[in-house]
Image (cartoon, helix red, strand yellow):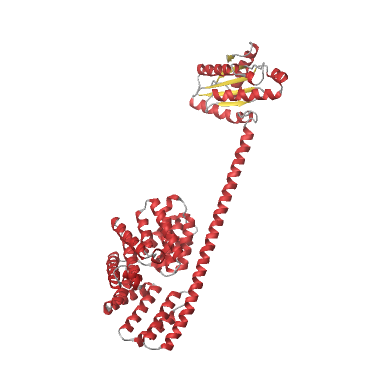
Length: 539
């Protein structure tokens, strides 16, 4: 098995781990693919995407953001639009979890645009599902509409993974809405919204059980337990939350596990067991690393404050409230730091794009310069026709192709009659203009596949490709007539120009030099025979 195959095997394994909800294992598999130096850019992009998704579900938000950004930097082709949309949905979820709602919304918009441009309905469904979480930025009505659109599309395309995400997100947003009594009134009131959250969570759980995905089961049970808790169905809530907590602990979903443990403490307090609940909270608080678990620390302190206040322990409630204020300041600093990282990343990205554009501009300039130098080296500066150097380069190749294929060639050697007299009588400026006009008339008379060159002062060569002798005579006569009949007096009154032409068909048994010599001999005969005529070589 090759190194490429090994990497593909790791990527497939990480994908299967994602489908099974084994995110710790999947993150390790994705990281193994990333550390393989033989990985292609596309393999690295896929590994980064998988890694970002696993880390997000493991609660490692900052690392998930970093991996998703790196993936976007590697996947830039228009054909990868759907893949890019997937990375934007990861970033949207990550920034939403971090409380940076404007950044989250930006990535949702990008994901929707890319998925729709690509025509990938699954990618669009994921983007709609993430849009359903953006109630703080979009408002409850709009986010709920996106949730229903995501669910309908997921069912239409029979994509159960996205269907679960849509159901789970709708349950989460309903729970969020139920916490705002005045906002909930616009949608039927808190009880209606909680019943909706419960229904969505139950559907999501049933789907996760059919899929065998442990992480989704734990998440769905967590949402279901919270809905039941708020509905006052405490025993059913405890069963759901305890199962979610056990699954989360077993699979290493630390944030999810600790969140469920906090909910179990709330249940204890609601059932009159405040003392044990506070002890359990205290034990949880001892396991929190504030730098890593800031949101959890805040959740625990807030729950402590509420329980102590409800129990009449106001002094303790005040202590926890003060701790909560400190944590809120830390959260604000953390978000500001993350916001700064976003801006720095954007600056770095803009600078990289600027450097890339500048490099491309420099490369284009060098290519144009090379083309110009090549043109100058191979083109006659006055007439724009090929020069003698280029003829010496091309002619052997043309002859070789003719020998191999049997395609007929003809050499047409042209000399302007009495050109020295033109220069002497009208000046070299007029002489140069005569050369330019002759070159223009030659270009008009021949095809793009033919060769036209200025090989001396007033001497030109045309090589007619795939042209019989009879046809070559016709072309040569047409050239001669076009030059003889040209309005030379427009350049200077009294000016007249003609040409003499030597024509030599190529014969396979002779050398290139002998072929051109035959054309030159025919030209000599034309000159001595009175000029302004075409002479066919007899060689």
